[in-house]
Image (tube, rainbow, N blue to C red; front, top):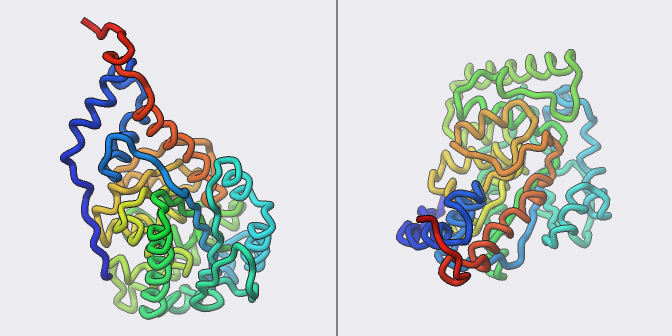
Amino acid sequence: MNFLITKPDDGLRFALQNRVDRKTKPLGALGQLEKLAVQIGLIQQTLAPEFNQPHLLVFAGDHGAAKAGVSAYPQEVTWQMVENFLSGGAAINVFARQNEMHLAIIDAGVAHDFGKRTGLINAKIAPGTANYIEEPAMTAAQCAQAIERGAELSRNLSLNGCNVVGFGEMGIGNTASAALITHCLTGLPLADCVGRGTGLDDAGLARKQALLEQALRRYRAAGGNDEPLNVLAEFGGFEIAMMVGAMLAAAEAKMVLLIDGFIVGSAALTATRLFPALADYCVFCHRSAEAGHAAQLQALGAKPLLDLGMRLGEGTGAALAYPLLEAAIAFLKDMASFESAGVADKS
């Protein structure tokens, strides 16, 4: 884990807060946008932050446990949705275009051969993970390789001038992985972390929980512990591990990280357990309707920007929240102060 992640220098906080407070408005009247403006200013170490080349990275990977019945959808939907991304027809395509964000699709480990395709980055570790109900999802070497490949993506973005990156994912069965990771890293009961994913009925939800309990029993019987990298290799997907690496390198490069919902949240939870300072670079974009996301947010001490009842994934929450970040830096830079506008302050 060769990353150097430090908290943003806090020396500029007073000047940023004073700049926010002197705008032509009552103190605190812009609510969460004010905190967001200060956070971005601290990350970029400037009173006039700006975003360059905003990117959304959507990582796709298959899960061996999907064939055991942890999802309502067959595994083939993963590669079919990647094709939908590449043809521009998914929700994330629509929202990325709307907000002028560069969209990149990464094959982290899909059980399909796409060939060389425009808009697709081939970073495949293997055609899907192993079935963690029976054995670890990935080896330690595969996990490390996925982390490093994700890190390389963020480093390349930074070298090309990008300073804000959003994270999304696609992988049938990955809410089950996220539930196991969340349970292990927060200590909350598994039942509080397991949701309906792609739309399981009551019977499907009960089957999903029973399968995840079986996976946990196997892991504990083998002496498994809750060290973040062990949990990630045991239950994660290649797309989740690759996001961990991409987040770590993005924070190291002092980029703003747009954190989507439950699955991306499991990567952020893992990354912050490894390097707690990473949290200072994260903007938690929305509260997913998936059951375990509230547990993640609580564990991270995070207050999301949006709460729209969404649970689609793909990075859609990050794309929808991005205009709020733009609004935060716009008012910080362009809104008049009491002094410049000649407006009387409160007595």
